Image (cartoon, rainbow, N blue to C red; front, top):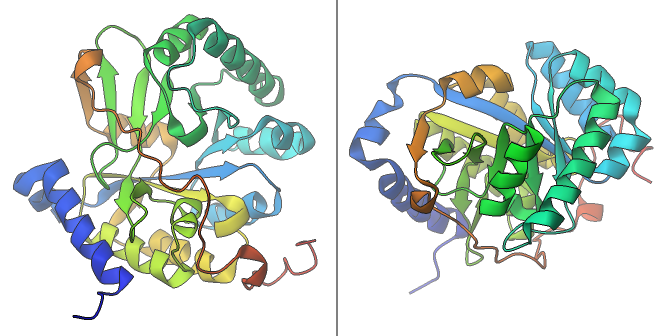
Length: 300
């Protein structure tokens, strides 16, 4: 028998994940538009963020932005402007996954990231994430100590995004949308995550379209802006998603006010520590992709 194409394997995995995560009732709930949030991540450059900003401005939308400290400092005017427009700016410690990291270390690192963000945006930093959206109980303890409202976590309910409110803590966990792809396991619904697992931009567009068509109640669509905001083939998937009538794209606060909150003891909150793509295996390396018009001279 010939091997099945990657897109077919993805659809089988997505269907199984949707049933496991939501049950029949959850899938039937699809008649209402999905409560959608755009999340941008930037470790590299500013051009992709600026492109996303222009496109979201056209649509009267904003996003949650997770930005590494060096980029935040180099382009502080951009992030101050975005915060002024209503974008929610999240700190990130991208060098380390906060699984089994001692409390004192997490607290010190999170305090540093919080101060760096707040110096630029002049508002409280409300959201934080570590590498791979990793967190543990020490992360929640540190978040409470610093007054951080939300910690980002790896997806635990398939493509359905959800929020967990552990009864022992004030901080909540945002469980991002998660999808399987090919033989490299699951990861966030995100350009980098799928690119690193061998997806092309066209594959990504198919994945996003099928997730939107599945009619989940809540969704987070993530972009590493130096990919999705700069390369034509990848941007096309996001552009189609933004135009979809299946989703109401909302600001972070509006999204958070609509998303289902699961209040559970910490010990009962599902945990996802699967990361099978620490070494990327792209089908097409980024230098071989076509840049969006207007970005050709900025790539180097």
